[in-house]
Length: 97
Image (cartoon, rainbow, N blue to C red; front, top):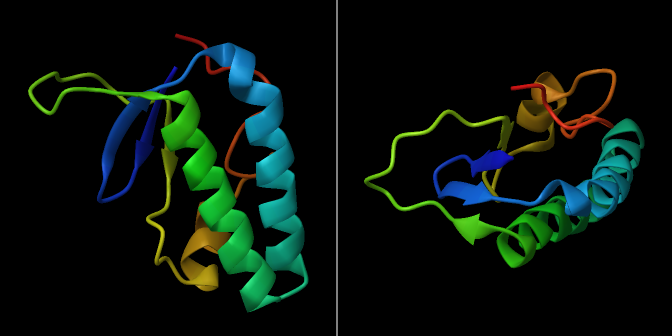
């Protein structure tokens, strides 16, 4: 699946990493619900770091739609709250292509 980090680029991430991404996404959602900015910041950075670690950067000259879009690292908690769905930022199942 292709995951875009806003302002940074796209990463091709194997679906085998979905469980870990969901775990990190759950922690991010809990921090948002608790209005805990320090924990939110740590959780967002952990989620983005895992995408960078597990993913392979998509070349800038390759045009491909993103399956998921994640906020940029400096995003405010309110900006991320607007992006959340019932499943958080990362769906439990891989996006259907």
